Image (cartoon, rainbow, N blue to C red; front, side, top):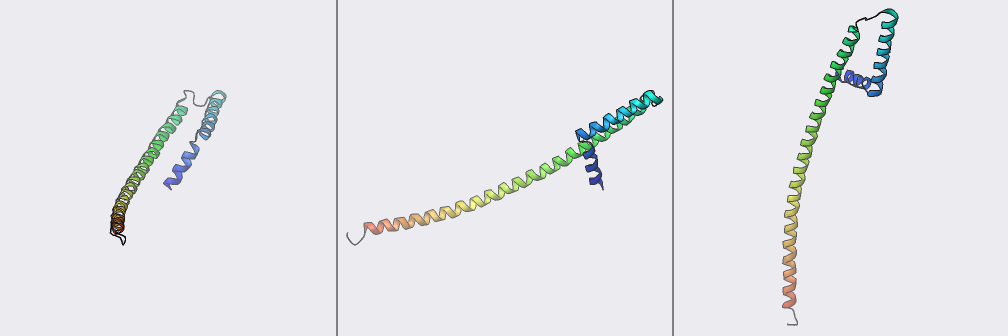
Length: 120
């Protein structure tokens, strides 16, 4: 439920949607103020806009914290992948060294065989 409310609020708070809502609210407040004398000291309008700003800053901070947590998890995963790849490459180096030593022994045996061959 919390995620749904957060997503709904963030959808409303998209710049284009939010501007439409704020302009509508301000236009309605101005119209009611001039036509009916509603909120003569602008206290209610100011309070509503202040409450919205407080909620928005809290929600944005919460979203930023969740993003930072996700980024930390991603970084940890990347470090683990790099360590795994390092270990794998170390194993490959060991295998390649063993193959090289085997090839050098074979090459040495073949070159000795040519030096001591039937024609000599």
